[in-house]
Amino acid sequence: MEFKVLIIDFGSQYTQLIARRVRELNIYCEIFSFNNLPKNILEYSAVILSGSPFSVHSKNAPKIDITKIKGKVPILGICYGAQFLADYYGGQVGKSSTREYGRAKLNIHDTKNLLYGFKNNTQVWMSHADTINKLPSNSEKLASTEDVKNAAFKFKSEHTFAIQFHPEVYHTTYGIKLLENFLVKISKIRQTWTPDSFVKMTVQKIKDKIKKDKVILGLSGGVDSSVAAILIKNAIGDNLICIFVNNGLLRKGEFESVLNQYENMGLNIIGVDRSKQFLDNLKGVTDPEEKRKVIGNTFIDVFDEEAKKIKNAKWLAQGTIYPDVIESKSIKGPSATIKSHHNVGGLPDFMKLKIIEPLRMLFKDEVRRVGKTLKIDDSVLGRHPFPGPGLGIRILGDITSEKVSLLQEVDSIFINSLKEEGLYNSIWQAGAILLPVQSVGVMGDERTYERCIVLRAVSSTDGMTADWINLPYEFLQKVSNKIINNVVGVNRVVYDISSKPPSTIEWE
Image (tube, rainbow, N blue to C red; front, side):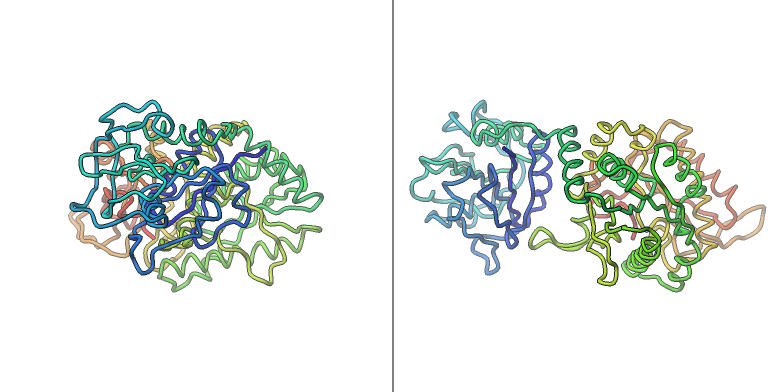
């Protein structure tokens, strides 16, 4: 029996965090928007209803026909999910007397099931403006707080539970325990979803889907495409043909070094240098979204051309991962598109290849764990993420070969300095950004009017959120001097101390 959990997303900022916590329990889960639910909903072992920025009384409040699953599959409603259950079955939901955000202490009324192992006054995290004033019929209270009289409840004689706090956030002390109680003790789900099981399942699925067709994979040198390549290679062997395209926006010397790296991994790889084609297509383009689209469309043109040279090539594989999907389109109901990713959204009609994305539902840290199971070298798995559009979105404004060369030199100095100082492996992602401004400087008693560079280094787990790294002042001073002294055309270096949110990791 395949165990899997369905998370119904009503638009909460925490939905992906729910998924991460479930997977930390070695249980597979999938997120579907409330307005695009799977047809086979009763095949899931449990259902979690997420929070939402909406009130259940809002005109556009997200809703589902809960009668199709209630009492048939174990359900856990979180925050809005709890309020939705209460309102749907005759309870009363109204505005809180005070907006309830942050820490609260839980008073336990029943420790037999969902709150098994909890202690009184344990800390939970609240984030809601509405509250459940009256429980629905045929339900009973499980817990309360000083300000929330119905902080948790369950429906009698069935495994339907509701909580007004967020177990998925770090600040809820027994949050992971609650999820484990619901999924393992109550829903009887076996904790079998591990990197090893993912590899075995995915390799078999690829074999069944691809059969004897040939697959083209666009390699980038990064973690995602590398793991995708080895997964597919394990399934279909030499029927995987990898293509590494030099789009003219790679790091210094990267085209040659990556080709060599992949040959040592036993992959069948073709190197294609299309630097001029990409740069010509980007000429005069300054809008970030337009840049991404131009680069994405050019990649498609290149792969379409290369695919025609390979007999029986019917599939295009991509290293798409979950954060790419989340940021590119609103898969979670009322969320907003942050930015498009060139490897998300399908292929144009003229391209006769079908897409296969074996990592599409994984977060970056999960991809790395899968890579370790596949015995991929740490030098590959430990590499910082690098955007698909490359330096094209780290050069603000129009892109020229002169600007690319300049930024490649700066980036090389910065990344190599991090490695030399032993800082590289403690950083999630680092890079340099070229600003579309010039500033006055003084060099050798002469006035200069040259370019400004931004250095960026962040810590993260999966790229969904990120904090800036507090690099040592001495290091920043040293690397700044080295850049200005060695890269002609730069006379100012600044350091970005913005976190995500509210900023993104890349500037474009």
